[in-house]
Image 1 (cartoon, rainbow, N blue to C red):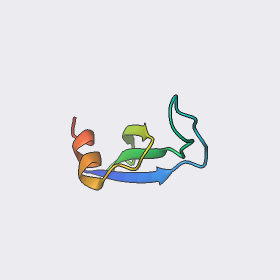
Image 2: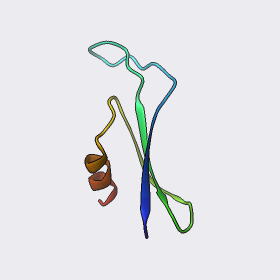
Image 3: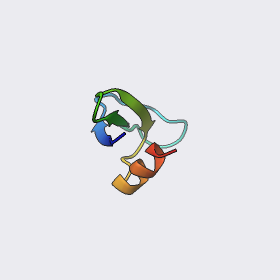
Image 4: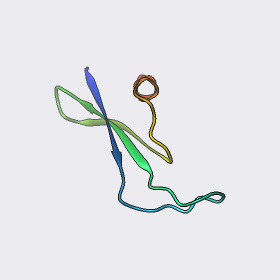
Length: 58
């Protein structure tokens, strides 16, 4: 299975318990063969590519 990570900033504002409002990032993984979604995460700040790949391998 070959996974392709993708990152997209969501067009919504989220108010965390502390700090300013943020637009969260959606990180998703898609299987190249079937185009099935194999994983996702929503985070307050964009994850660097190596971190995103490491989380998908879990």
